[in-house]
Image 1 (cartoon, one colour):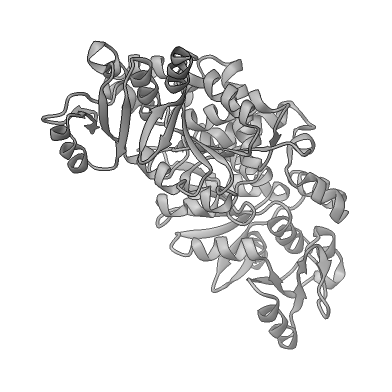
Image 2 (spheres, chains in turn purple, blue):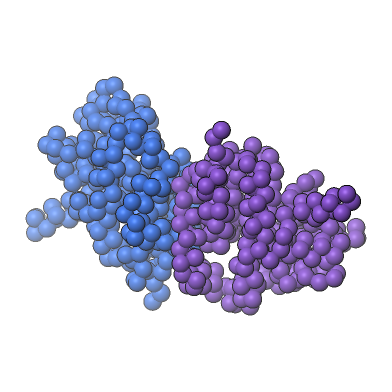
Length: 247
Length: 247
């Protein structure tokens, strides 16, 4: 049997060139949407509805959802949380339904709607993602959300990190995959690589989210596997745990 | 005065996200169009008309042009040359007008038509490109043609190589630029990187163009600077030489 493929897609712009239909797509937006989603499930959230606008998000307030989002790094009036992973920790998150505005994330999910499955990946749930992909043994597309269709370091590097983990059982396909693997390898060899090279680093300092960035680059803080089903995200591992308990 | 920017654009798909209008765009298609264009000017060609189809190319035959191109790695009936750089060496090229089919190259030139200038870059004329860009001191976009809109190793790496050369006088902008610089750095540290990692390497072996690839990765074989003017490419350095002689 031939090995399944693993492909790093370094921007949603490239999705149309790839075999999305029968693949598991991993949506990656390390700073900060997919990290925060993992944190929310790590804190026991019941479901997260990803939305592309503030207005749509606001309509979920009266349905009993917590609503989350920021614009230009600032909280939105009437919203319960911003985008920081630290917003999604604590007892108020347990069993909560959350509606979250995330422009890049929602765009990636929409662009991947033909996929076999859509899951959410970040450094904070990386091993859960890798284990799941290994168990499925199906073609994988690691979709770096980037920033307004452009490539960024952290999403591409995470794609490379997962591809490196899967390298033996999967067939790394496309030069973009090799480039992402090489990038992550360079980051491993130089711990200050990200700080020295991130184009948006000054913006990060300006937004005062240095602690967020440090958190987002840490590995395996949450054993969660967010999956997109019926227009919302749920934690596949939470379900599994529940089934186990019922037995 | 602020430094001019240098940006690696890893696929024509990203051009729309970049400030093309006031930049010099360097079109890069190492295997093999831009390398062969440099070789042709190094052999004394007078002009090269890049075209996207065999049919358009054929109409130039009766206008006294040599016509060049391949499809699926094979010569086209009635054509004078293929796409190999070795086709563009020898006395028959001196003062010749050439029409060349190059799908990716023509697409890139068309997509860059708003640019301040469009020039042609390859490893074989790299120093001429770097010197020209330094002398101009204007924003630069290094446009990797890639393969059917996908990123490839050799074009991205060349973009990274030029950005590394310009790093002190120019401001590397966009994460894609850092990624390309990191890629070229990895290639410098591992001479077998390309052979180990190129997705299309088996295809290269199959097409029997290993000697072409070796040639295309060599640096500074030709002191030429092809520039796109009035729908054709001419060698800016050939003109300069002529002016010097006239003086």
